[in-house]
Length: 272
Image 1 (cartoon, rainbow, N blue to C red):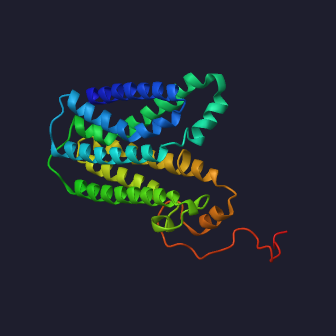
Image 2: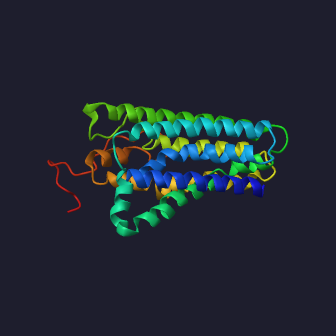
Image 3: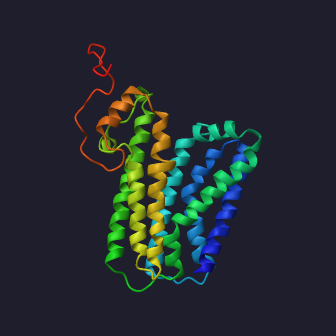
């Protein structure tokens, strides 16, 4: 088991170090986001190929699912990034860090992301190290959850991309498709699919320790760099505030009835 995790860690160190050099030369640290999904593929397939791992069906299933998810995500982020320059979050870091940017970017962006990838990939790596016995109920439940989550994420991303490509929607908030039922269908799908991977990995003897994966991804998306950071960008936008008042942030649900978030110019403010 140790060899699998060490191999994955070294591969991630190499991958993120290469991305650091690319970002340094391009003056665009947001390129690391394109490598996020593919980094899982490199770490997991590399750990499987470079250790004495078996070709058990459970391991191969997880490797295939990780590849499907990682390639789609990498291609989507890469396509979306074309011609946009450095993402606003990373531009803020560049301004805040000043002369300390080179070493802080290496540690706080690239190495931190590599560590996160290693932790989230835990169910896959545990299964590679010891896949366990025959398939069981948790494998089928996990596969179903992965399918639901993957479709939610992929469809949500596609709907948002199509919405933004329409010049008439410039500066507007998407409220159609899956986005009518949750403000972040792609994040919801991301969390659900990692629960699916956890349940598949539960068939491995040490599979329960893979619980860190869906818990960590949920914490990051709900409390740290996902929903809070993104929604802070739109804070105070009247259209977004109205959308926020009637639409769940995460779990899909029927929209609440329309309500005014800001006082109407024809109605007195009852709180004044």
